[in-house]
Length: 389
Image 1 (cartoon, rainbow, N blue to C red):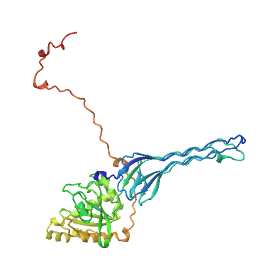
Image 2 (image 1 turned 180 degrees about the vertical axis):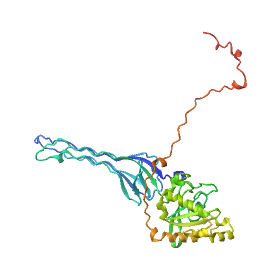
Image 3 (image 1 turned 90 degrees about the vertical axis):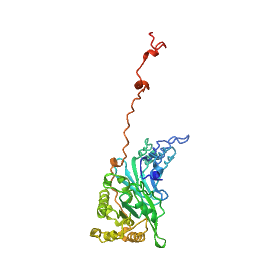
Image 4 (image 1 turned 120 degrees about the horizontal axis):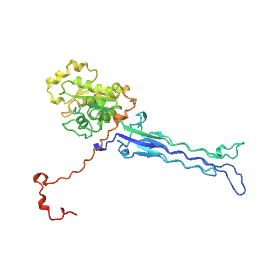
């Protein structure tokens, strides 16, 4: 399933061009000078984005490299209108952001279910010569051409919609926590970057209430510059109302690791620092009670200006306290509205470089006896190969 999580596609889109207006002069047996009656051309089809809450990835668009609407039809005689081109509706999951594929400029964003956004508008149809008749020009012999089509290469990125986002280094216990508090089944192992794609889980709370939690691959120092899985998944925490930072209790410098994570988020998008933050000290079952008490009372921990919760996903300690802290932050008024400004993307960095084609080496003929024994040409005489013509 991890291979089916597609959150980035690049597509060439083109709307339909408008149909040309008709230039026609009416002729009949008893009406030799009927005047102009050319009809209008049809409108070209548009490229429309529509939000669909039943979609979770952009997998259905992975192999659609070209999406084009149809052109409008030409106008006809007797003021006949041309046929309108058919619109192409692109279904995208909620949370899809669209950028210009050439410049990286932000174009639009689909947030709600059934929300429609016209990405490329179809060309208008041209007017027939019937519209240009006047008292002094009763037989105009010209008509309008249709408007040309619009074309553009766009980049679509999915930014997961979730209430809480998990931020931490690899093997900080993020996937384990998500598997404990929700029904999600992320991959869990004792090696770095076990999680390769974002994972979503619905966390149950008291009285039938719940909230959504998102786990992204681990962040390392330099992720904002593209190290590790960095830029590919950092965008998934932009929409989260609360960021849950996770640092293991076995770490040598907990405030230092938290500062590194915070610095990477600031480099990626400074607006992320305005979100509510909670620090969870994980794997507390790996240290004894004396060290845990000493850690709670340390001055470095007290200087951190954010709520701190000590948990152990394996032992199940501190989980309820963590849920209470997350629910309190989620229901604060300042965390209800999640508005983010989408900065232009660097197309040269986000594009995956294709490996250079390796030059094919010429096949070499290998003789088995070339090394084992010397050539003895005498035993091949007399079979015709050495005869002179």
